[in-house]
Length: 450
Image 1 (cartoon, rainbow, N blue to C red):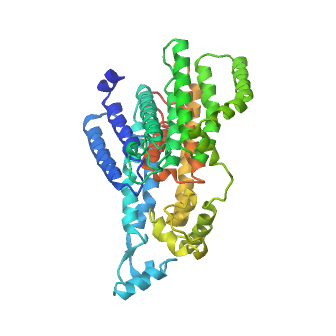
Image 2 (cartoon, helix red, strand yellow):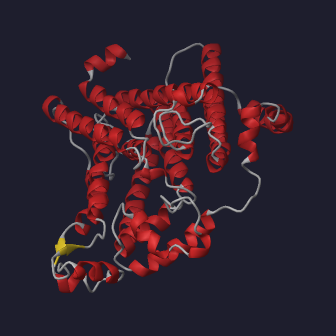
């Protein structure tokens, strides 16, 4: 792989940005230093690409996605005349505060928190740069990207193992979920998603490899086992549930790669189901695993209170929204006194609701448009898979598994958390979308679009 990366500048630049995104992009808004560093790395990588990579162009679908993602925060930063912004819902307190200092008649943007919206806009740079780069890679370069994801996530899992065993000295951030496995992330839920995505990447990276069957089986067992165990040690309940679902296609894919027949695959799954109670019983004897299982105790989740107040905030700013990235400032005026405690809400713990609060009706329209574009890209990728033959068919199938599995993981976890607020996960989502495009150097099918 090292010799190949020396030959392929495009793959090398893309992988440098990708690894930086996974390692530096997990601190969240309370750890801005690494995110700023990542944005600078992205600028350098984009400039390096423009200078050294020639003869490649991103497909139209990528430019459409880039435009859709940028449009809401950009428009929210455009200054409006006083009569216009004052007429928007939810601006009464802002107008009253500005009136006290004689600025009520000044031009103001749609966003009530323009600094946060600008910060969110800049944070889109690294993920969208990855989307743009990955869409221009050929099939072999894309395999290298998948392998790079798997290796980096595996390294994060090893760091997480040291965190669980060795304590706070191994955590990267001052604000983190201590005593749980977080790897390169500050948030254990985000790390669970990264590990599941890494598991999908590890599976996809095994396509068309020439090792002996016994070696491939050993690599599969170690890789899947380690990443699955690491996910459980994050203690993320939703992450563990998503892992349980994703393990089915992952194990099936590895068995197919090992050329196991359908009857043996069925027997393997049946044996797994029969031995599951014993495996759970043994796992409960391990203290670290017991702590993770105890989180499924059915206690009342404070998310319900957040969602109730969050819905009130969404209605107050409807239909235009209050400003991308400004959830805390937008939410606090609507938090009920009876649910106040010593903690401060940093997120809505439902990314769809948070997006509704921040972006309103324009945000919903953009989200639906993005979903439609991605659905068309998935359909086109499926057609290319059906038309492929030989090793290319195997590679296409597993790449499609990675992309669809990554999209599903993030979309599902967004119901109960905020995975896309991690630049690392946003970057992995961008890679998944980029891999849905037609690889550079392949001939499009008749009647299809790039």
